[in-house]
Image 1: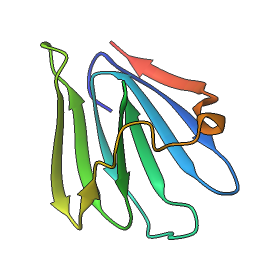
Image 2: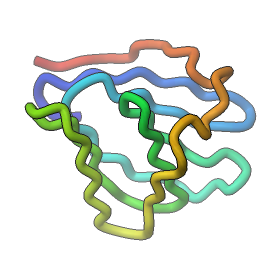
Image 3: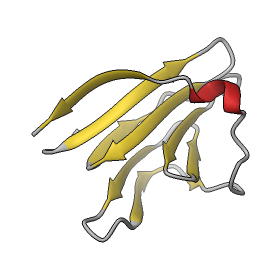
Image 4: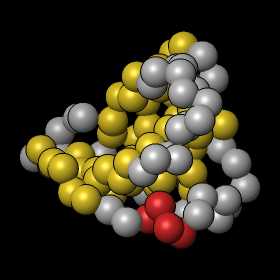
Length: 94
């Protein structure tokens, strides 16, 4: 997590979800095809299995995805079930 970043986490038996509200996070994901990891940024959902990537919300409110290992996908908007949008804030740094 970078300076002035904020995100929340929602883990269920079927999914792992990070909600990035602002800033930048580096994500290192263990492969788990049963419980894929999704990063929700506004109305975008980034999905990854066994990869390393950075997601950033820029000052212009654009979303940047930088993959350093493996692959990341940005599926169609609204593809994440609303039941996974239950958030629990776990931290922010300024």
